[in-house]
Length: 410
Ligand SMILES: [Fe+2]
Image 1: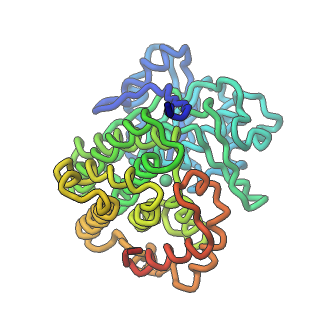
Image 2: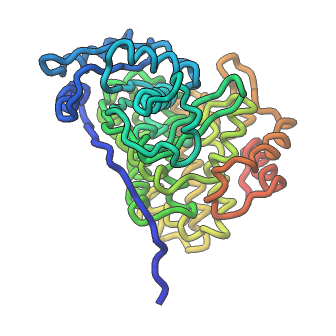
Image 3: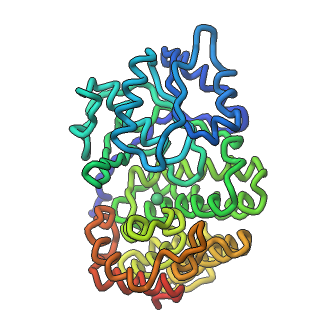
């Protein structure tokens, strides 16, 4: 008798989800026996007054040790060193990160530096998989975008600018202790960014579901994430002040983060990382364009899994009324329709193919002549490891060319 493959699953993150969750952080700090946090955030968040809600929930004797909002768009070793020294100087005993991926990853880096007694706060010896082997200081994360899922992952990416490379840190000890999903912090996220980050979350859930490291527990997280994103992302884009849609997107992003932290991602990230690095296209924008192509490309090896996504991308009726062999294409088409809807809701700003993408200056950063270089470099990205289908340079180029033009692979 064939048995199911062995798998592991972990998530120890305490979640506060709902309005007024920021005020709950004080209660959580009391439980963890800490009282003097370092708060890392962005200037925009600090200006909005949101950090005040955290302090409103402090218990007697609690006080913010230091608030720092000077964090670059890409977290780097130098910033980690500077903040770790500041943490020690101000006598802090825990960390609160209120921000996007860079702020969260910076907090994870600072936590390694201050918890493990790194000489000169240099965390490079801990880069790689499983190098952090002990419990760190309590870390609370308040994500201000609903996409990266960093508040639910064991990963931190920190740039070594001197060496021009990005260091990847993975360890179960990098999972935050607490994630705070408060709709007030995403209300001011502009529609285009909401669409792009939401499609990143959708990609995490879809890839976690159809890539090779999937397991039944992460499947449950992924399916619920997809169901929620399909239902609430268009509303969050069309009605930025809709608190319910914002909260549901924060929850979905967290579910998708937990799914992919356990089941990994695949070729959408493989190609997307490289398009992002070479052409400077935001991560979520790359995910939105590439996801339907990965579903078509992987249909031969993972057709049943991709076809099963139709139940959540559309509904049970669409799944049952579509012949089995046509379900993967129907699922890819459902993602394309969602992209088209987001494009309409953002007055054409959300790109459904690379030739449509324009940056803030109105330039077109992905040009046809860049595609061979992107294909060449993409095949070295580690995220291809769990993709169902192999991806050669010529395959990568074929997918990129189709995604550039916006035409189906089939
Ligand atoms: Fe992603």
